[in-house]
Image (cartoon, rainbow, N blue to C red; front, side, top):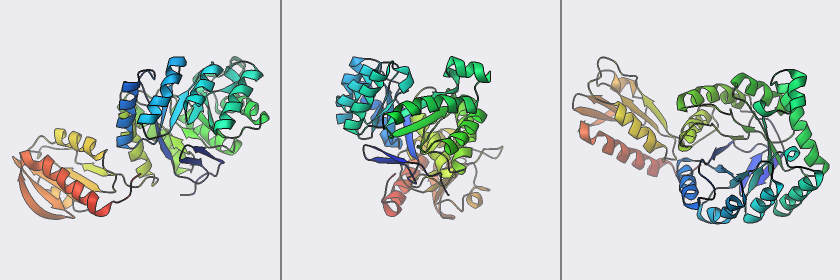
Length: 358
């Protein structure tokens, strides 16, 4: 897939933009000063494939926690800063890898100059985040409602402040809770600015609502070659965000080493309780870095035929199931052994076929 060419920025060991791959991002919902909770959540996110994580840095306690959090985790950290330029400077000095900050919101020019100076010294990029719901009053009055054009006008103001200080390690985002507005804004941004774009639909809602809204908007953009980092916002446990985004990137042909789970919708022939098995395997597959197709089918009538293209499959029946590999039935199992054997076969497949990770 041909992707939009942008400037590239360095975030610790990640190259973002240019023709580099799309990077998976999430955000902690812990208080950053709670080091134990924040580290635990980041390690969980790492395990399922998150590559970049943002944390709210509200005060000096949050900023001071960054050093220890970075020491105990492995992926680059982003500080989310609002209004206080001194907190931004403290975060950079504590070892943050990137900051999310709108330079027009931190006071006078001397404040911006101080932030830019320390970011240059430590090679820290800045993401400018434009949200349709918080556009400047004069822009909202000019357009009468949130529009893609208004979001570009807002972004130009912030970008110009940094460019005038000869700072170009910039990333941009244009988020809205309206998927159609997101599409329009990011399309316009891709032709307006030379900087990498972070994709997201803000306030997308619960797991199902977010999966639908984000896949519709961000899938459209990804298939047009737009986007360099991505977060799918979900209310609740951020680990759930990674589940959606990995499948979206895989469907767009932008992510390798990601399992594909096939599960039949069930019908009157289904003679076993397969939903708990599907749920458990979906969670298990989040820890597998391998292009493996796994099928869980509801019955032994159509299951073997429908699962013939899967690498590993189960076709369940009353109190038992068939274990299938590459379309060939290799074993009949009692129902209580299905999950354990399926996991065993998947791990063996990963060991044999998949040496690389994300």
